[in-house]
Length: 181
Image (cartoon, rainbow, N blue to C red; front, side, top):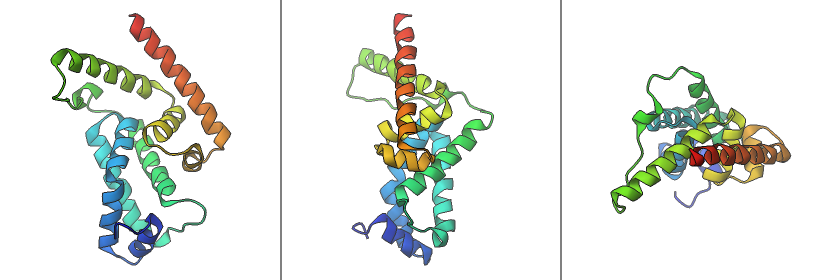
């Protein structure tokens, strides 16, 4: 089943094939969780959003059609909407409580520097306007093309490129201010 395309798996999911669903989840779980984590800033929130997104894939599988949009684009749109909904809800837990994974191969000074940099970038990304953050995460963290991101965001390719330019400029300015401090 690993050689089947996403679209073929979706056709099988529409018929209630649990193995096809498991294959699709296995294929996209890691990247989807990374995308949601970057959008939400919380590993727990990201895992919940991804779980909800896959639940919707299962529930709406019979209605999915590959009319122009790939599964990946359709799925990112679902996940993005769930992330936006979660981001708009009041937060209970601060971002710092999520923590960062520790790379045991580095010494403590390198770990501290990496942690500070990662935190500064994550905070700067979190401060971006919603659409700029979504475009940046989709294109630079998730590897979607500008065309795929435009389809998921329901924007033109030019609009996505403009969002990316503004997001990069805002990040560069924000991180330069932090570096000087």
